[in-house]
Image (cartoon, rainbow, N blue to C red; front, side):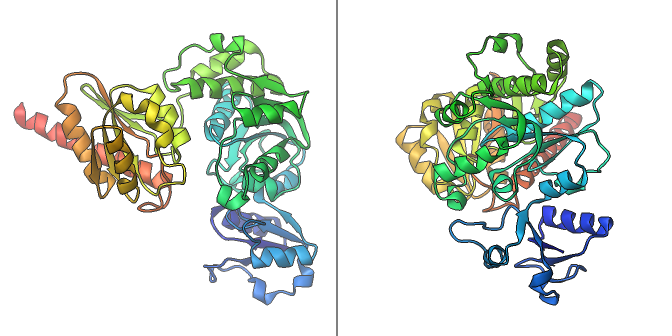
Length: 419
């Protein structure tokens, strides 16, 4: 019997899946009780053999969830939804992608290229589509795998395992960088082919441990073949394209097919997404940038920036972005981080204003940007989590898009009156 521990989206998908497969299971969630599934309290623990854990449940740090601790004592197997997918579809091909940044873009890019050349490929996992929402009849599964999914699962059987990069993140859950890196490295345990980007020191050490891995670095001559891309701007996206190129080569595609597929990719929502252009003003939605490391890539990629920044700040703050402040015409700081970020901007003499929320910040940014004659960019790249005002970064990005639609309607109305 299975215990599904945690009933967020992946847990609910696991419940639906196991029910469809005719498997016996019970569920537990710290906050939800009445979901129409058999509850843990109605079951004898001796019957539970496998625990399907949601990523948000603490496995070990700072301490294991009480039911995880009990599962260990009962010698239950601990797995994730991605493990279940492989067990119920064992004869398929799998590509796994992990790393701190770039995972989602690379996952989507690989899937796009495979589909473009006629391969029946689907993507899921940490990218936002639970693995068990995917049908079992596809040929290839491209899975974005977080450190939480990797450490909560037996090693995955992967045709290609991809490592994007590693920077400090999720230390509240992992404790140290060594534990974080160890969780990520589990992706290689049963992989046939390994692709490792080596443009950061942590990743270079990982590559040294796997001499059979394909190394992807911006110094690679292949980079010169990856011509400028309309939707994937900046060095980080050049790195993303290079990693995807090597992953697809390892999978078996030829050089020309890969390059043609990459050029037709239009990018991902909330990741430097070009939402609209009104006159000389371009609106970029980079809501996925929940850390300074991610925002750095956006500041590198654009010029003449009216920067919307803020939310629930992380420990790294925005100090690492100081070298890029020169590209910012004005910053519009909002949310819980506004006081902390305002102090940093003031010290470095960056023109800024502080606001309660993004609505006010965007209104001011657009009013000021339209007064300028030169081309300019209104960039939402918050360098913060969204949880002070939004459910997640997707909700924040969707709200940004809605606000732009309102501006568009207002501008259209004004033009009609003038004409």
